[in-house]
Image (cartoon, rainbow, N blue to C red; front, side, top):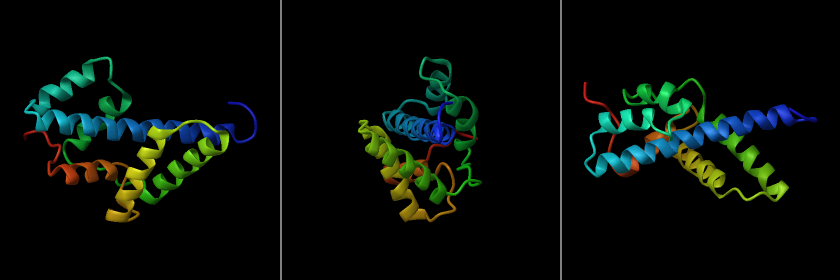
Length: 137
């Protein structure tokens, strides 16, 4: 990957992008669902379109059944997001989206505690919207 620390920075960047995909997908689905778009149809369209991602392909189906991926603690997520946004700050690199993703995860940590899981920020968005992202059984 490069010099000293490049592998760790790469790991943080991959995780930043994954957490960003998760909350962006949740926002998209919440807006669409609230606008009256069928959640099943919208999910299928996202999965088959140019905005598809590994998150949508591999993890969204679980989220839509209520799986918030509790195997990785929210405290560790916030630590990683803080590390990469701090690095961006030190490097003088604009990072408003990364900062927003970190702030949302920090808010979820304060609301739900450290062991809430990788998709706790999505749960927070659902709570704020008063709407759960669930496909009909």
